[in-house]
Amino acid sequence: MAGGCTTQVRAKGPVPRLPRSPSLKPGFGAVVGTLADSGGALPHYPILATTPGDAPDSPHASATADSVGGFVFDALPPGQYRLFVRAFAHRPDSTEIEVAAGRVDTVNLSPQFFECVR
Image (tube, rainbow, N blue to C red; front, side, top):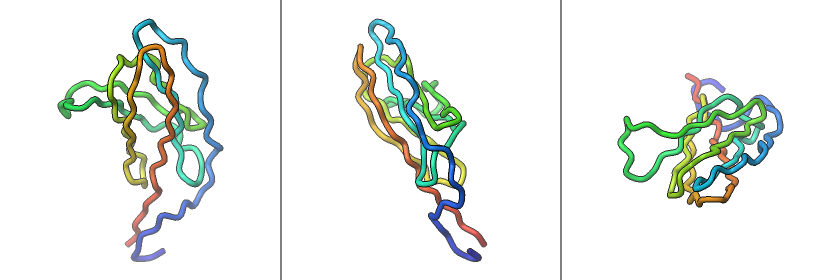
């Protein structure tokens, strides 16, 4: 497409799969999830877990999507988090989640493919 933008995915990736649930550490919660667009899994992109009020330069928990788009945060202190991802040629995506001690939550991140060609 010359001179325009598209959200059509050109390649089909592997089907995204959730990783195994981690063993929980006392007093912590966990999040397992998938990172995929409409074409399939988006492997090897980092996902950040930020908390409200974090300074932009403060350290954040992070996880990286595996070869089938699965990721795990295995020891998050209880609280409110925003999971955030930026994948090449995709719009950024995020979701909010409340992490509780002794619980494993599941999320799906699905950034939309977006490419502009001049």
